[in-house]
Amino acid sequence: MMKDKGGVWGEIVKEKGLLVNKVEEVGMWWFVEDVLSNQGMLDIMNKSKEHGFLGFRDTKSCFVSWIDKIKFSKIVP
Image 1 (spheres, rainbow, N blue to C red):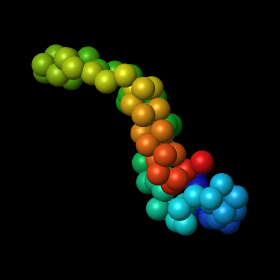
Image 2 (image 1 turned 120 degrees about the vertical axis):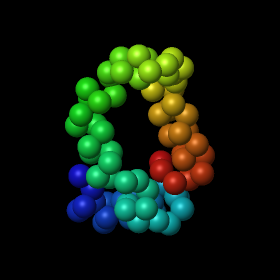
Image 3 (image 1 turned 135 degrees about the horizontal axis):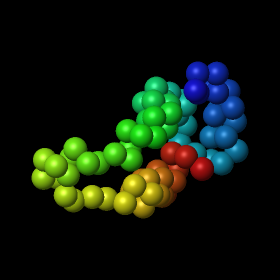
């Protein structure tokens, strides 16, 4: 997913004044690709509920919260 994006990421870091880092340090891209390519894994919570895990967090608000945190820390634009 991001193997050949190191040069582009370096340009973005410089242009946006981010903390200097490599694209490999920003995320576990193999995991991101796996999760985003398997939507069913995120949607089905029936088995968890059957075993008593009834609490939940809104996925979108959780993602937005973490993205805001890493933007504030100047890790991503």
